[in-house]
Image 1 (cartoon, rainbow, N blue to C red):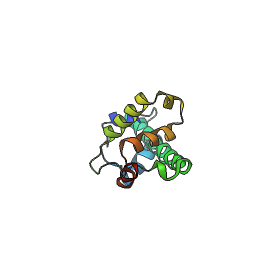
Image 2 (image 1 turned 180 degrees about the horizontal axis):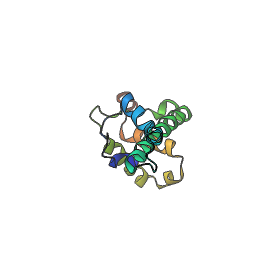
Image 3 (image 1 turned 60 degrees about the horizontal axis):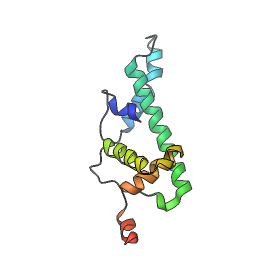
Amino acid sequence: MFTCLTLPAQASDTEPTGLDLITRCNAVRLSAEAGEGAVPAETSGDYGYCLGYLVGFVGGFAARDVLGEESRFCPPAEARVIDFVDALQRWLTAHPKGLEGQAPLVTIEAFHASFPCADDAREDQ
């Protein structure tokens, strides 16, 4: 996840579009078909972004299935990628046992704590 934050090509603080995903996920194959030999760093970075996005997406759904409704989180519309990084780091610092937990489960716990949904906040009162 951290490498995708430093990519200059196509990186942004918003969710990727379908075009972003197909471009990044096809980057290595297209480079090989063009006969460029060694994969350029930018291309391998794009492919790494693709793999990271897909692993995170699938892992998030698996964690949600394990944790159920308690795992919901509701970030503000203006949330940026760095806000999620900060939330995860804050939570792991406060809960060091999470360092040994499965990444998707730990991440959902961190996001749930940092970005509670309106109905969750009412239930806590």
